[in-house]
Length: 137
Image (tube, rainbow, N blue to C red; front, top):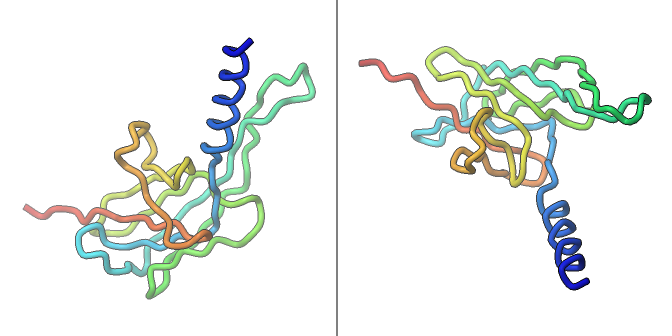
């Protein structure tokens, strides 16, 4: 019995502590000097797996693709609605393209699950994304 209780508490702790946060605002900054970057093109989506009517088998529900660009302060603001962006691609000439995915505790670079490539929060509604400048050798 104690093992079942411990397992239940552990699953509750993990499920509450690992909630994904989806937002419609990002601050894009230069990864080297931290200055905001204007004119960054962002493409966002909120695709999600949801249970279907057929025995609850998960199906991919694709959302409308949204587009936005950063202003002088580096702020990218998608139209509100749709629960926020779970996946966003940032692109600007002179910088490496960056794909981010919503995860806990912020956003991670897509394809990196080891926790070493997390992007943190500026505030509760704004994730900060650092773009890496291209090297010109």
